[in-house]
Length: 317
Ligand code: CP
Image 1 (cartoon, helix red, strand yellow):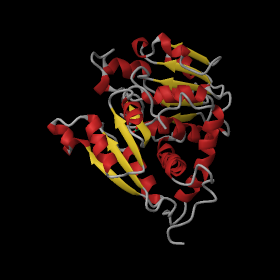
Image 2 (image 1 turned 30 degrees about the vertical axis):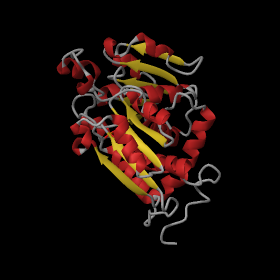
Image 3 (image 1 turned 180 degrees about the horizontal axis):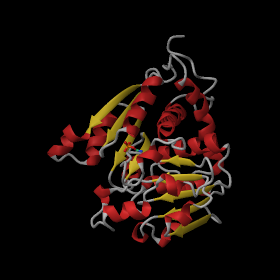
Image 4 (image 1 turned 180 degrees about the vertical axis):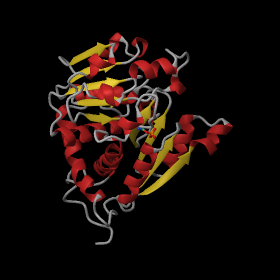
């Protein structure tokens, strides 16, 4: 699972459908299954993460698998070991799959080409974050009842966002009309042709216009760690692009507000919106667990042949 771009709408629908039983399990008092008992998931995060790393580790644990955790900051990478030698070392301990995040776009693809190990991309540079794209889609499908034909506005630092790319690849396959809004240097023209063939992607400079009639708003973090020169001052960004309650009123009543996290409250999003009734931020986190359980189940369980519902034996059973 290296990206959303090569998947068809049918394959994505299958993955979302497979996540449904795992959403139900999160509500169960006993959340631990034995489905992947004896399997090992290697987690190698070479970039900071709260949600994705803990979510994959929890997904593995709730399926009964063991997790092998590389702490990049305290690993032998610091002594000069290469990425490939580090991953080969993990592979020699015989995990069943590798979940990998790296600051270089294409790093998980580089590893997947060289090792016979199943690799899940947990975010590569500014390229893709496929499990985030899937959990966003699950949240939107649950909230709107469909993915088809929605008006979706993506707001903020789109250029540096792997979440934006995965969301654009995914939502455009379902006929969503996408509006991209942010400082012009962060919303380059190339993004208009990023979607599925025939998809509608427009760039809009004014946030008020971009929010008009939106069913869903995806707000993105300003990725200061990837900025070499600030595009504009943070004060100006707040003034022109922050999602405020007043601006949100231009969207459809009840429009969903998503943010992949981490949120910088008071910068890209007003705390009143982040904590407001339309915010799906924590629902996204819960859905992320379901999506990642489904991915692990399908990749290293019997998921290739069985459905999650048929194979959700509790560890206690
Ligand atoms: N959404 C996301 O990828 O968050 P983390 O960086 O905390 O994993």
